[in-house]
Image (cartoon, rainbow, N blue to C red; front, side):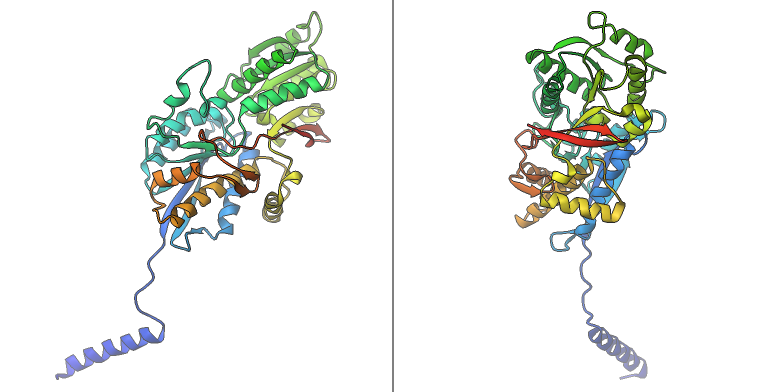
Length: 416
């Protein structure tokens, strides 16, 4: 054996001994990446709500160490903004771009969002045609996204070109919220009500349900109209409303809108013309149940009522109370009610991944993940024990009303 060959063999033997001593051998296979994205308005007044949703989603991922299926998969999460600085709120062009980007990236197996129902209307068909890519919302409440529209037959089905449902939500829809709200306003002693909405899918949708229910239960609807969200002020409108009830103001005003659509200014002008919110009750849905609305309106927000699906944070089941504890330990005091819905949305995405793995399936398969989401029944989560129905709606129907007291929303009662 020549010296050069001997030297080479010696090096190889030494290297193999070193590998053995270090526990070497074949390197473990790298975990496959599964991507989850959220699409929420991270610009504008909704940020006070959506940032807590994103925080909660990140918290849930940290709790599972960003891994799934025994470490075979690593979860990558990106929080996308569907708002623009130009509009100061969710932007149809941006949301459409987000949906198309997600559809094209085959590593993405779940799309968490949207926050605004109008945004969901744009994204659902794009994502449905791609896999379908499952979409789980922590906040959309327009009934028509999942249920047949009595006035526009076939509209809901047109959102699902594959004929397979791929959109679900962990929050109760406005056919529940609007009904409960009308009964709540009547319970406050109101016999007459004037209804306003911001002319968006969510705002008009909940206002329409409120109007129909109000009439059914014997309240007089003095008027119902859409506002211009970009108006400089609403004093002329409020002056008109102040004499709309036979020369006097109605007992209550119900507003279907989101905070981004000039909600605080609308309230300021109402109080300027008609007085405090005890004289003429002022009630809205979850779109105004945010600290940003109170901060924007200031002291005149005292007495305003707003509803949110589910129970108050301190009335959550044990898993929900633990979430609040964990959230506050990491991010500080939690006041926004939608954070727990963000947590539950990520909970569902993770459960779907684990269920697919447990069944011997492939969690990179979008269709498999979507099927697993819709198969979820009797899930014990942060919101309680609940299921998805065939439409993708939650079986939870509790609704809690809050009132502004001392600069914050305080729960006043939970209703079915």
